[in-house]
Amino acid sequence: MSTKLIPVQTPAELDAFYRLGQEVYADYPLYRCGYGDILPLLVEGRSPFCEHADVTPYLIMRSGHPAGRFAFVHDRNLPDYAQIAFFEALPDIENLAELILKTAKQHYPLCSRLVVGLNGHVNYGAGFLLSRFDEVPIFELPYTPAYYRDYFADLTERQMHTFRYPMQEFYAWGERMRDRANLKGITVRGLDPKHFERDIGVYTELNNACFTEHPYWSNRSLAEDLELFRPLEAFLHKDNLLFAEYQGKAVGFLFWLPDLNELLDGQETPGEKQLEKYQSGFKFEQYRFHEIAVVPGFRGPATLALFLAMLVSVKKMGCVYGEGGIIFADNLASINMTKRYYQRVFGCLPEPWRRLAVYEAKL
Image: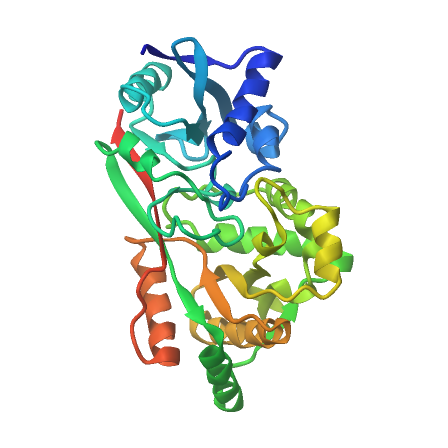
């Protein structure tokens, strides 16, 4: 069966682009939609991200019928990379990776690398699932079919891991540390809902200051981060976004959320129905530890202060498990920090819980 790629140019083609996700996951009851709110904003050029990035949606046609979709993304803040983002496809499409690579070379002669599975920016999500196909993913982590890996098997695989941990021992460790911790003048405050935009701006500044060495990082704007946080604003408690301060200046943050996927069915995204359920006292089994960032010089005491503050709030929610966000396997600084804390709390080294990957090729 013949395969070809066509750029999305008509409303009917755009509708087919969006429907591909529904078609692919129709028989996957464990799937949850991780980027539903941001997808049309990026694809249709309505996001502030598009002020420095070109997003070009494509349909993958098999024998004249849509069988897959992706978007070429070129972020001028990440200039060496052409991206294959928001990829979804039915199984058994012949020569797909070869055709995508050939088309990317034609479109992006000045790019040196192609990355498959990065959705514009790491904050929008990244990776195809490699394990844990038998469970619903934690909030905003992807669930993709196992055969996606096969499509790009000839490219270089860059694995990412998450780590999951039981909370009772973590709570007990927090109680012990709280009595003897020397935080060296670090204080912790929560998000101020009355100054929401200001605090998201602090989050943005710390992100840009701390993640310059993170794989695929490009600096964010306040407008981009507000666009991500606004759909979740009603679900945010002040303690979900914590700031570590030294002499009144923010030197780090920690962002966590209860696993909102526990409120969702299928391809739903958080809305009024889920908010009502949340506010009625819903008991979450687990939470997602999204990210932590601390500027150099404060990483020991500020990291500890943020963890101790988070544990107080998570314990109030009654969460039994926690799971971290994705960490690239070659991001040794983050992997080593995770291992240090895990060994202190649990007395052993952690094993990855969930494995994901993006794929790279030279152009």
